[in-house]
Length: 283
Image (cartoon, rainbow, N blue to C red):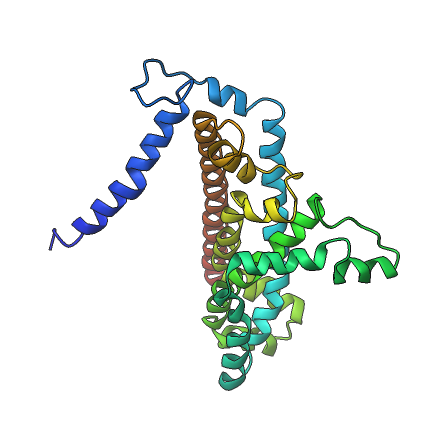
């Protein structure tokens, strides 16, 4: 039986561990050459943490966090209502919301770009109400693109979280006179907080490295961490693979720090909830 895990270990080593080691070694080089490096230093990381790239990393973190939070806030009430519907209607709405996942991501973002351009339907509609806001080649347009692009992605994880929630807990709170807000605060959110956090991270991490949406909707004028990495490896100018690798390491470390912080908060909240539950039962 000990051999059953060998294919998974080989896969993880060849396609995750070795590429990551190569990325780290590449980031420590001063320049990329075919010959083995003779000197390794942190010059590329020092450059990545100075102006303007330090600001780009900060802005990418803030935009991804805000967009992921907006996606979560929009999706929670919708998926909650669908999860409470009868089985037949639930399956119909489930199919309706998962249809966009079957479409090519580039096609969906290009369709959104058509709506956001100056002569697009959404821009013209907002302009008639006095909201003459540039939606293309702007951070706000990229933010809308991130929200639009990842809304279908978060739907299935959230739906599975709410579908597994026991109705008996909600009915008991309702019988005890709890209002809708109290049921959400004291029953639904504590019971589903791990799933909500996982759903948030499920869209936040890919948003952090997203380069297609900023490239198409931002028009190359909105610099994000993803676009900078892409330009260093595949840009039309002179590529700088060591610097692109250093930015990639910064991306991975940023995502890892966010994951650790979220899981620390979740574990502490779960421990406090269990302690409070035990004390309440003892009293």
